[in-house]
Length: 558
Image (cartoon, rainbow, N blue to C red):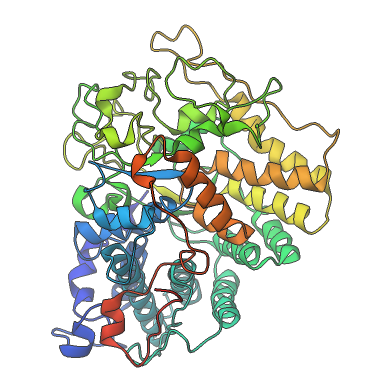
């Protein structure tokens, strides 16, 4: 099922010595040793080079620390939004990520370097694969398909670099990275390059691949819809979503199945990073390794020493409050805190699929309690449930890495595609009833999922009440509020919120209001503020600028 991903480790050592990249001092100071002779590969070797490019989706190149603080899942960026706290062992644990959360980051913050480095190295691998595929003369090798995969990966890594750093170089397969300036191209030109790569991938890729995990045509179409969404090109969003919907996608029946290995490559997975326990230290999802609750209440040891990073904010958990009709409280949700399982108000059931809450069972096992929270700085906890399987799952790793499994990570899942379509219809003045139906499809899945139960299974663990939006009063303004709120509820702690706030244009106001209101829960937010025109993007790493002072220009106000 995941054979081609499991073979990644066979070629990593070869490629580390042979790939050019701009994020290590060796590229300027040391000539590579044992360099791969390009253009003389066999089909088998070229495919291993491509597989190594896929490994960039795991961001595990330079040891554990860069994976933790430069993750492909972008959880460290989410702590800059109103959705998440850093978590961990207090504010002194991973001070670099604490700097992101408190907007005290600067060009020397190591998390910024790791995030840059991991993407640059992945781009280098993708470009090496492109050159080797183009040079290969083997009539039996599926050249156009594999080229589509490599070009897709290059576009993905540039997209991630772009959304985090704003001013970036674009590195084609023949670009000299030692002279590629991050101000050489305009933002629109970078977008055009990314979209051109995804469109080339779309044209070269099949609808279905022989091996699970290889990128297909629908993933490229989905990414083109995502690019159009970020640029506000609503008609293009609808065009590319139509292409995605030609594929075999539908929402899973149960929300909880999104966090189960059995359904990880199921009908909702559009673009997914593949992980495995075949070699736990090579192929596990290291990007989310820190994000496991301390969990001493679980007997088998799988969660025994989790680091408890990436916790839901109180503000996010409060957003799951609903009215008597089961609809969100857009303007008043934060007037009452949802904490323990003793909360008696109405709640969207996704709250207890997504986070730990005091007294609420954790995936059918022990109840989440104070002892599961690693630091009192983050009480009452709200550890993320989405990125781990149940502790009694036979496929969970017992011991370090804590709670490790083969659970994949969805960069794009079908629920988000439907929400893109709904947002495009709303913003373009399209069919509002069609948009309402799409949002209600997402809510209906949550409504009809099996709710979290008490440990004895006798009743629901909380007063769950979720309803569908009626047609009465469904204006464009209400529809806009609904789709934006639905993204927050459905996609919580999946790495999207910071980018959403930025593209909606209300980032500084929203985050500063959040900081003021959240200080009673997290006192370290005192004297913290978001600076418009600065904190929308990460600073370029200073060590990169030092390596190329004539080619790199720092982002504004850093």
